[in-house]
Amino acid sequence: MTTFLAGISILLIVYIVYILITAFLGEGAKEFYAKVMEAPVEAVPAQLQAEAEAPAEELAQVKQLRDPISGETAAIPTNYRFAKRWIKEAMVREGLLDRVYKNAELQDEAVEQKVKEAFERFKGLKKYWA
Image 1 (cartoon, helix red, strand yellow):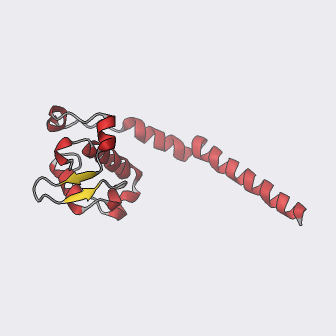
Image 2 (cartoon, rainbow, N blue to C red):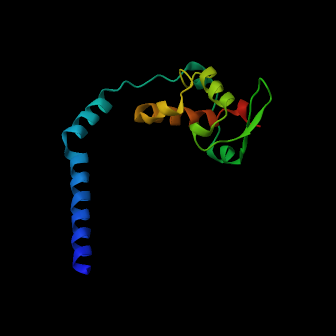
């Protein structure tokens, strides 16, 4: 029985090594890196450049966000998927995102990375701090 388990373990390790090698050296990796290198860099909106983002130590002290329009407050979510609707709409108003994304649309890695970066910048906007 132990010989059988050892054989299965060796096959699993070989398979994992194969997957890693094909992921980093295969044709799909070459296409992916080519697309990444061709991607244009988006300009930061002028409004965001004018408004200074908070230093990291100040940002760590903030626990809630407040909507300046309605006055509603919410805890800072850890993920865009769990953010309240007004937070998502405020990100669009600030020019961080072009629209509010549905959870199903976040499956695309490029969209999810764009949303994560926008969400991190939004957390630093002082006018939304409670």
